[in-house]
Length: 250
Image 1: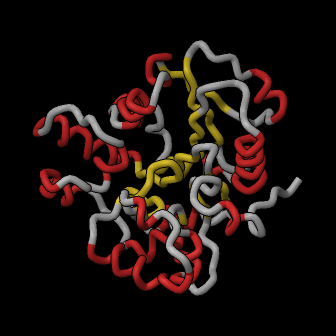
Image 2: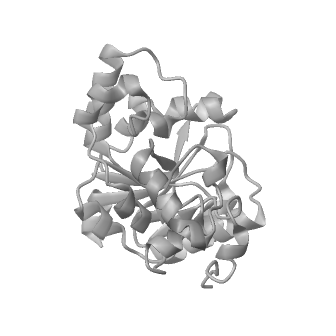
């Protein structure tokens, strides 16, 4: 597994020591499926997570200033910071794995081999596309094909050299980014069109093979009833769909 240590690391943001039951399950599954890769907890400097290491001795920890973990806006600032990605310069890729994600099988090396700069679950930031039923799967497909799609950052694969280049260029020509960090990397805003030259993204159909987020029932139809590599926000978007699939190997 030596090659994995330079290829990719799994990075898990944690801002509090007491995890919910679902977060504990997410972490257990991550360690079961992806535990042969370096797994690094990103945390506030003041947070003591020694209990995590007792449970999972292979875990590594990387601290950042407490101010980056106070709210969503602060976290977004961290995730668009060049210094954040410089911290992981020893790796070609990092998989951001927030603890509302769930991984089904180890396809991490295969996704790295595809050469994308950024991959996440395809999502439309419109409530009417949160829980599209199976019979309306083609409506979901049409929307994903014709509207601006965000590849969600909560479970996302990121190529470190590409992110460093992208942010250096962005910081020269644009003001500080104020929105959700994944929108910056997907160039969701019209004014970011020139930045499309600097980020290789998958089409939504391939991204759906990487992860589901919104409308998992419709997504399952569109993949021919094939589960993706992982999913994000499974409790938020149709937990009933996920109930047969979300199990943890002990």
